[in-house]
Image (tube, rainbow, N blue to C red):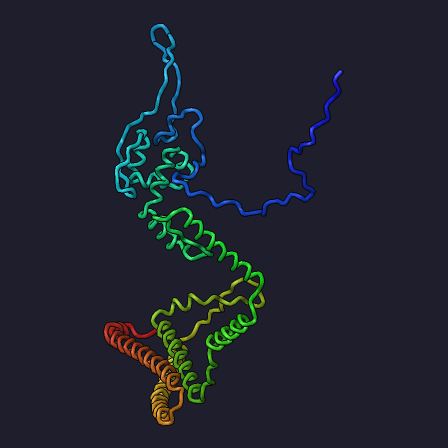
Length: 392
């Protein structure tokens, strides 16, 4: 009986008591710069795979039966999309594109205004119609400089240019490693900005910001306007009085020309003894001829007195305007000799006063013309009628 052999003492692998040192964690590698389009969001066709090779517009094959009229025999048949091989012009690519197009899609391309406009549609329905081949053509068109400039102009029109931190890379004529270095450099700058924002500004930066804020506050706060002088106060009060007189004179002329409008605009007052809200007519009093004549004479005298007082007041206002203009001219000359300010405010106030005086004169002239026209009318046909029938 053979004795068992001792196991071999040869070490199959080195033995060590040190711990395994893991590899340092690194960031995920940068995505490779492929020459193909990004994946189609809706994926390839599952049933009618021929539609991935052209612009089918979502059309698929349909199966059915053909039933004869004579003996009702069913014959299996299929309805395929109406496809055409066309050379379509692309403005972005500046060349003809050979592609299979369905008849309905060709009609849609004509309605959109070209192949590029059809491919650049943004709605979900259009993206579904494109399919894999349409998605590839869309990617080719969007890479052209013409479409890029168009998108850039649209972003500028919408105000989306310059928002956030954006890094533009022009990859034409560069290698992939060069672009990766630029991406890493740009990402490092962005990370540095973020870390600096989190850490907070330094003391020097804080001092500079405080100085800038102080300068901004000094330049942004308007200097306090000086208080108006006694002459400016007098000019403003006179201007307000003339404007109020102009408005009142215009209202009086309107009441003389069309008194019914003013009378109809005033609501009748309710009687205190009756219920609230009920309207009562004033009591009617019958006057004799003598009382009517005396009342008319009294009203005429009061009207003449009122008109004379208003005319005198208006004349006084216009005279005051002329006097104020002389005083303002003298004040402006003194200010120019002394080299002081306040000339602009005086000129503005005087111009407003002069405009108010001219407006009052215009209203007065209109009132005088209306009175003369009324007198001429009364001296004509109305005088003859009053002479014939007498005044009652």
